[in-house]
View 1 (spheres, one colour):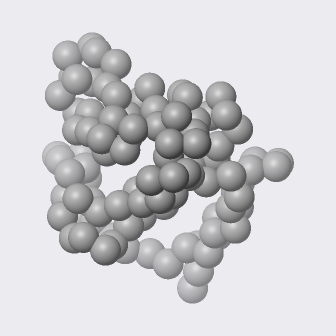
View 2: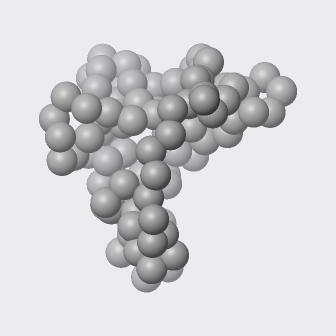
Length: 104
């Protein structure tokens, strides 16, 4: 969340979400990444600067590649806290896609 905080996001909140998802690539699994043709370094590369300069950041290319394979998202390892991870969905709450519901 730190990497995405700026003047547009003055208050960050953590909420509990229940997710049912299939066809999600786990970037922590090297064999799965190889099978999908994904380099983890590309998937987790910083993207903000390249996007600000009008470029095509490597993570965005990875996303397009995975979507073409039918993937709905990735399990993304934390860069600051080894052992932690987050789920990044490309699409959700549409027919045939992962379903996410806020809990509580």
